Length: 358
Image 1 (cartoon, rainbow, N blue to C red):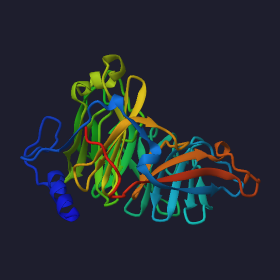
Image 2: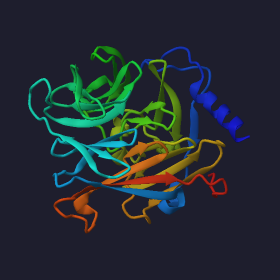
Image 3: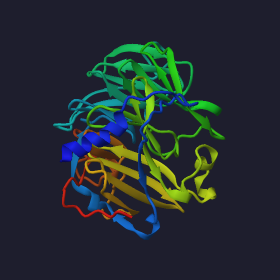
Image 4: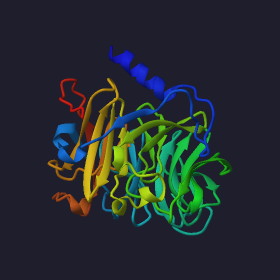
């Protein structure tokens, strides 16, 4: 029964779609999965109610310095961390030990100027150089394999089968937010037109990769989530906040003064959709059960689990990180030096979990 329900839901998401709208987004006969989130101000949602367990991995740098964590990605049993000093450090998740660290800052062919995002795919690690307007691709041992030039500034990156999806960091008025390129940097398509007064990407990553490897994307402040399918984004999920749903574009950008909801973080596991949003200077959360299409949790987020600030995803786990100096560990001997700590948050999958449907 559970499999049958999932297949029915997946049919909404993966159905072969037909025509495209003005954003280059495919639309078809089936509607996206829409969840209604109403009267959420009356509820509270404790972090402990949505988590099954938390795993931690301490990362030791063997005496090498590591600045605050800017971005990270995973490749097999490795994690690659881009820090504020522009260094990239590769750690073994099984041992927490540093395997290699590079910091090749400069203007040469093998160097970068201002890296601001890192991602993995196809057995490679891809570093995005904001100021250098290029993507540097490395093997698992951080040996440079390829340099891909692009002619625009980028905010984030995710590899896809035929190249990359990039978030345009300076779309301007009526320009596209998501750009699809091949591995040589040639633009193959542009999607999701912007109507923003400034180049802005808020807290929260624009790209999501679920445990099955499917890629999802969303625009800043948007309540829509698209799945990347057949080289175009397909509208897959939508959060409906009723009268508090902002118009896309500048009202969404200025959601606080408009008295609307602003969304920032979304995560998609095998059978959960977890979304964070802001309203009236408070942070709220909703969680949907993608297995049955019925169960729903919502409310103001109560952080009864200290340090719950997930930013990334690794398989079924939501991932948060802190610098070693902020962890409070005593293991700070010069020869081992705690560089950072990763927190892996696993959502509650228990079938007897009580949900509220408003």
